[in-house]
Each structure stands twice: as structure tokens, then as C-alpha cells.
Image 1 (cartoon, rainbow, N blue to C red):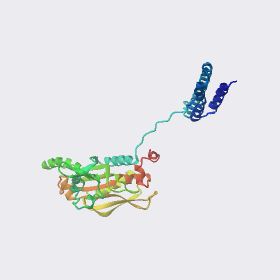
Image 2 (cartoon, rainbow, N blue to C red):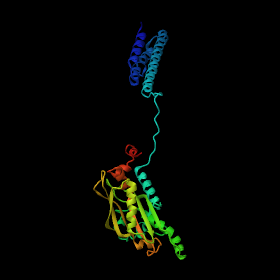
Image 3 (cartoon, one colour):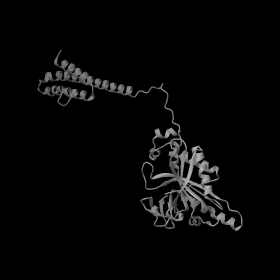
Image 4 (cartoon, one colour):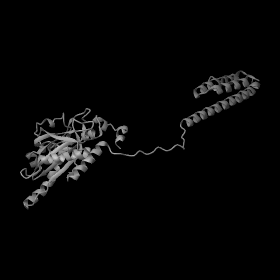
Length: 351
């Protein structure tokens, strides 16, 4: 065995011992690289006599070809081993059952709003929806809020840096009460026409559910939340009717007769007199505690005038309830933020 055969065998052994591409390239450099042993032998041909140069050159080139063939074979073997390892790691068992498509469901707040709409619908109330970007006039002035009222402050209300065609500032509505104004104004012309003919005027019964926005955020408050405002106007609508309506709502929504309702005197610019509404359950996890669930009151005459109606002929009440609060009470949720995190593990419990 000559020196070239020994060199080829050494190269083949080094290539076989290389288990990674980087190690193989290092071994290649030792034999056929720019400073490799084959390259050095080829450079040494110049020192040989002409009669030996041709034969020696042929032998070296033959050894080089054998080394390069062994190198390529090892490269192919490493690539195949890597591919097989990847295939094993990413293997797909086609006999396994496929992933089932999840079944969609309603958010607990959506369930709550739909339930409340159905309850009020059974009592003859319409449902009104409107814009979430409202005018300052609709949000405050029409509801008897004076210009210096704290609720108009940017600490409570999100304002939009633009005005409407009448030059009134715009804001994200802080409540859905503007829909009471819009709904009543839409019916004012009809009422005026009936009054001119001496005909009885139909009552206005409407609830306005939707998203509202205020600068507030903690475990029981969110910058965006859901509110349901209600309005009932007629010739002789009183607080007695409000108590009956609200008791019916609590009875149907919570599916119990074991509760009490109380009205606490309060103040709201858009109603006079005004009252906070509390409920207390006689059994269950909330038994014995008074829970504030709504604000209410008899609609202020100034507000009725802004509706475009006669306050002498149209009296009644308005109220506002938090749909999120009702959802928390019904489903036993103690942190409002859970309902807006979008965690399917939480939301799937209600479907």
C-alpha cells in the first residue's frame, strides 16, 4: 500500500467519524482544502523530473477523486439522517381523530342583555340603539346637566377632538341616555299631530342597551362597559309603575321571588325626584346584603321639553342599569375585568 492509499483511507475514516456538517467540513479542509494534504502534494509536482511528474500527478488526482467521492457520500448520509430525524419528530399519525371545531357561544354580557331585552319586550318596551360617538348636547345638555357639571370634565368623559355640523363637541357617550332623547324626539311630531286632533297619545316605552365609556378602571369598573337605560312616559306614569317594572325585571332575570326592592333618595340632574334602587335576596350566596343595581327617577320637566314634548302632558320615569353588574350577580363573577380579557377558558363556562 502506497502513501496515497493510506491518505485516502485516513480521509475516509475521518469523514465517517464526523457526525455533524461542521465537523465534516473541518475534515475536508485537512485533505482537499487550500492548505490540505492533497493540495500540498499537487504543489510539490513542480519539483519532480518531467518523466515522473505525469505519472505522479495522475496518482494524486485519482486519490483526490476518491477523497471527494467519500466526502460527498458522507454529506449525503448526514443530510439523509437529518431528514429522517425531522420526519420522525414531525410525524403525523393519520389514524388519530381530527381536532373538533369548537362550538361558538354568547358572551355572558350578551346573554344578559338579550335576557333583559326579552323581559322588557314582554312589558311592551321597544329597544333603541344609536351612535356611540355622541354630541355634548345629547350627552349632557339635553339631560339637564349644566355646563359646569363635573361629569363634563375630561376626568370622566372621553372627548373627540372634533365638532358636529352645529359646532357641538363630540364625545364617546358616557351613558345610553342620549337614545332616550333621540327616540322621544322621533315620536314628538306624531304626538303633536295626535294632540291637535284631540286623540289620545300613545305612551313612550323604550330601553336603550349598548356600550358606554368613562375614565374609570378597577376590579368593578371598566373604561368601556354596558348600560341599559329605560324610559316610560305617559299621561299618568308614576313611581308605583317603576317599582312594579323593576320588581318584574328582578323576578324574571334572577328567577326568584325571594327578594326585596328598596328606593333610596338620591340626585340626578335629569330626574326629580331621584332614587337609587337596591335589591336584597333572601337566599343564595348574596342573601342578606343590599346591592345597588340602578339609578332612577321621575323625568325632569326640562328633559321632557328637550324631548320636544309637553311636560304637563307627559310624565313618567327613567332608569339606568349596568348590564355588566347584572351579569356578575347572575353568574357569580367577582372581577369585572374577567369579562373583557377574552380568555376562552373563562368564557366557555357560560355556554
